[in-house]
Length: 181
Image (tube, rainbow, N blue to C red; front, side):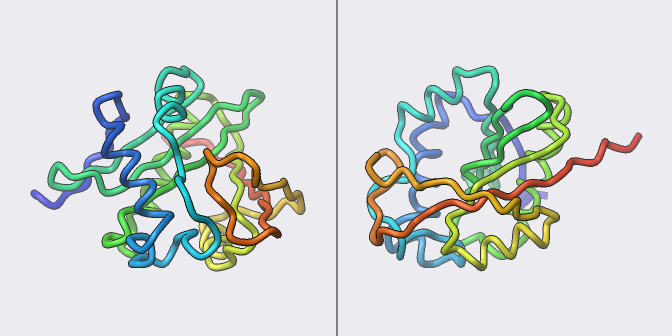
């Protein structure tokens, strides 16, 4: 089937398309085509090339890509934090392909990779507290709020330029079930 989604690990050759996908899913007018964006909260970039290069060079990190008909449709980053904890980040789906189940599939692939590659028993993430619809979506996937908040790096333009001064992250966590045989 030609419309099948193929999951692969990112390489250096994927970086231009990967950076464009992540930016387009989160920032600017292109992001507004989808339901999950930060365009009303942040301007500027979402991720820079040196950060992506560092992630690919780090054995404690993995970026999974979802390709459809050879085009990059989505991605997710998994980081081994040690002691059975992995971090899920940079979940991005092309805005034109959102609401079709790809995000859910990428989260499931990230959890499986965290278990098998890093031995993770828990998956953590942070979400900007103002993104209530996205937090609710993660809660439907089994993630729970820990009650912890973390500051947004408002003075570091690598993460974007805040459009408001009250941005912060809420921490979500999910206990990963052991894969069944």
